[in-house]
Amino acid sequence: MAEKKKKVSVYLDSETLEEVEQEAQDQERSVSYVISKMVEEQLRKKEEEEKPKGS
Image (cartoon, rainbow, N blue to C red):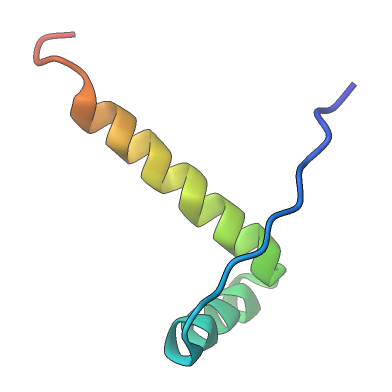
């Protein structure tokens, strides 16, 4: 069974929201989907950066 997703609220300035909305439109996805993927990508990037060298 798929994990149930949690709902969160965020505040974005107008310019950032416009950019996210444009990205969502370009991908034919929802704003929620685009933000979710952006957060996941940043967390994976941070995890990779924190790995010790040679691992």
